[in-house]
Length: 107
Ligand code: 2BA
Image 1 (cartoon, rainbow, N blue to C red):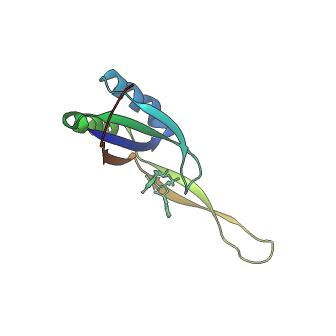
Image 2 (tube, rainbow, N blue to C red):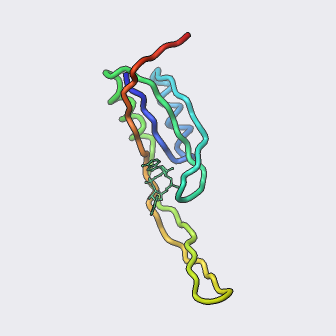
Image 3 (tube, helix red, strand yellow):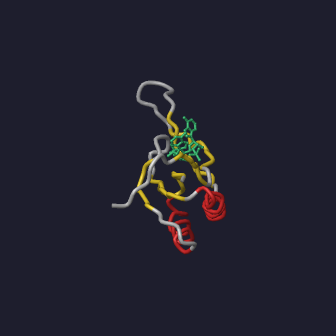
């Protein structure tokens, strides 16, 4: 068994969770915050049998879209002058970690 932990854009979360659930997978959705942009994203947890892992990854991939985002970056030019220069970063479709599950129980 594997645990899939996927960090996805909050805008894609509903579609990703809907399609995983429709395909019969159990999903836990967490409201999370990116350390760099400090904006909300969504982390989903999916416990899945090994033979279904690729199906989960394909569904996440199909319904997550990468996008460009402008981040205000500040630089100091002198006392009291801190202009904001927006910098464009590419925010991924999904950042996915797949972990081995040592033991799984539902009590
Ligand atoms: P954030 O930390 O808010 O990062 C958003 C995007 O900003 C990243 O997109 C990347 O393009 C850029 N970025 C992140 N850290 C940077 C840095 N130190 N310098 C320059 N640019 C940086 P993604 O790579 O697609 O990541 C999207 C979100 O996935 C991240 O949001 C974070 O919440 C999570 N994430 C990504 N890699 C991770 C990792 N190795 N461990 C834990 N969480 C991760």
